[in-house]
Amino acid sequence: MLLPLLVKSWRDRWRGLLAWTTGLVLITIVELYVYPSIRDSAEGMSQLIEAFPEGMREIFPMTDYTSGPGFLNVEMFSIVVPLVFIAVGASWGASATADEEEKGTADLLLTLPVSRTSIVVTKCLATIAVLTGLTAVLAITLVIGAGVVDMDIGTAELVAACAMHGLLGVLYAGIGFLVGAATGRRGVALGVAFTLAIAGFLVYSLASLVDFFDTVNPANPFEWVVGSDPLTNGLDVGYTVGLVVVSLLLFAGSAIAFRRRDIRAE
Amino acid sequence: MAPEPAVIELTGLTKYYGRQLGVEDLTFDVSPGEVFGFLGPNGAGKTTTLRMLIGLLRITRGSARLLGTDVATAPPALRARIGYLPGDLSLYKNLTGREYLGFMARMRNRDLAERIASLSERLNLDASRHIHDLSKGNQQKIGVIQAFMHDPEVLILDEPTSGLDPIVQREFEILLDEATQRGAAVLLSSHILSEVEHLAGRVAVVNEGRLLVVERIATLKSRSVRTLELTFSGPVDPAPLRAVPSVDGIDVHGAVASCTVVGAHDELLRVALTLGLETVQTHEPSLEDIFMTLVAGGGPDAAPPAGQELA
Image (cartoon, rainbow over all chains, first blue to last red; front, side, top):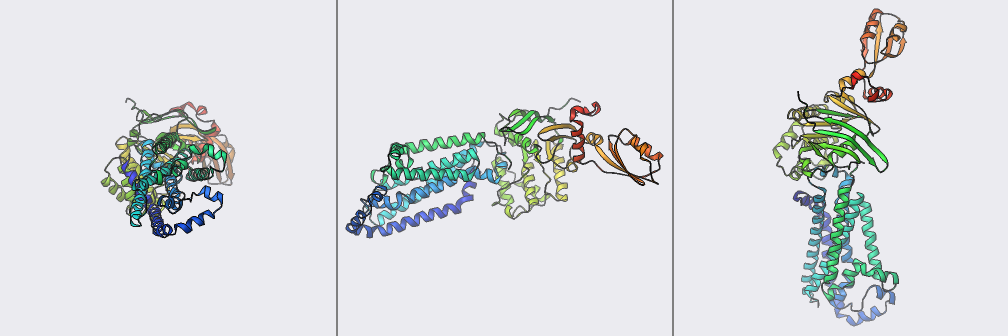
C-alpha cells in the first residue's frame, strides 16, 4: 500500500464525494421526515396501493409500504441507495487507473520504484474506504433518524442493509476497475459498469414476469442485496460472502490486467 | 583501458503492437558517464524504445538491461536508480509544482525537499504555483527536476529540451554534466541533430523502427552529404570541380558554384583554389542530410570500413 497515493486519491476527489454524501444524507432526512405522516395514513395508503396495476406492484413491492422496512425499501433501498453506491463505486473504479492513463499521468506514476500491483491495491483500498465511509454516514443517519421518528425497525437490520448496499457499490467498483485496467479507457469502464448495473436492476425487477430473468436472477448481485431484503431479514451471510468474493476476484483481475498492459504514448 | 560494463544494453530489442511494427532488432550499449543520442524523425520508434526501457511497454523480443538487470523481469526497486522524462509530459495539474515533486519524492520513499528547492531555484521555477497555471516550458522544468532529483544512475530522456528557453537549456546541460561526472549513463532522444550534437558523443539513428547506424556524431557528420557554396573571382568552369570524386552534384551560376559533397572536402578545396576561390560557405549537415546519406547508402552495412568502428 502506497500512503502518498492513497492520500492523493482522496484529496483529488473529495469535492465530488462530499456532494454525493450530502445528497444521500439530505434524501434520507427528507424521507424520514415524511414517514410519520405516511404511517398515520396507513389505511388510505393501502387503498392507493391496490389501485396500482398488477405489474407495478410486482416490480415495486408496496404491500407493506407503511411499515418501517417496507417504507425504506420502496423509498430508498430499491433504487436511490443502490444507485448512489453504484455511481460512486463505478466512477472511482473506472477512474482508478484509466484516468491516469488517458491523462498521461501514468507515464510518470508507473516509472516510480513501485509495482503496478501496489498501485492497483492502493487505489482499490482508496475506493473501498470511500464506500465504507459513505455506508457509515448513511447507517448513522438512518439509525439516528429512525429513532427520532420512532420507526419500527431494528438497528441491526438498518446496518445490515447499508453494509450490503455498500458491498454492492464495491462490486460495481470492481467491474469499473477491471474494465478500466484492461482497456485504459475510463468511458468504456463506466459504460460497462453502468450497463451491467441497469441490467442487474432490470433482471431483478422483472424476474417474476420474465422466465429467462428468473433463471439468471440467482447470479444477480441486485437479487443478493435488494432481493434478500436485509431491512426485514437482516444480513444474509451467504450473499454477503458472495459479494466479497466476487469483488475480490474483480480486484485481483484488475491487478493482473494492469500488470500486462502496454502504457502507450497517444 | 578496460572497457567499463555498459549501463544500458539493448540486444535485438523488438516491439510489435499486435502486427504493427514498433521497433525491430535494436542493439546498442551506453557506458557509465556517457551521453548517448537517440536520433530519428517523429514516428521512428524512439519513444517506443524508451518506454520499453522504463517498463511502460512490454518487450516483444530481444532484451534490454539497465545496470545489469533485465528490465522485463526487474523488480520495481530498479527504477529507484533511474530517471525518466517522457516526451509528452503530463503532470497532476491540480497540484503545485512543489506538491507534485514532493509527491514523487514520497513515492520514491525519499526526502528530497532540499534538492527540489535547489533545483527549482537553478531552473528558475516558481514551485508554489499550480501546474495548470504554468506554461509548457515551466511544466517541462518540473519534468526535468523529477528526472534528476534522486540522482539516478540511468537517465532516459525523451526530447528533454522541448519547450525550454535557452537559459534553462544551459542549466539543463549543466545538470547533465553533473550526472555524467558521477558516472550516470544518459540516453537522450531527439529529432533535431543540433540539439544533440553538443551533448552526445555517440548516437544511434533510427528510421521506421529500424537502426540505421550507431556512430560518433563527428564521424557521422564527416561522412554525410553537405553543401559547399564556393564563390570565385570570376565565372568558373564546373568541369574540374565535377571531376573531384567526393563531389556528388554541382550547380554553377556565374562565379558561384554550389557543390553537394560526401565525405572530406580537402581535394575539392585544393582544386577550387587553383580556379580562383575567394570564399567558402558551408552548411552544417542536418539530420535530414544524414538520413539521406544513410538511407541512400543502405545503412550501416554499406558504410565504408573506416566508419564502421562503433566506439
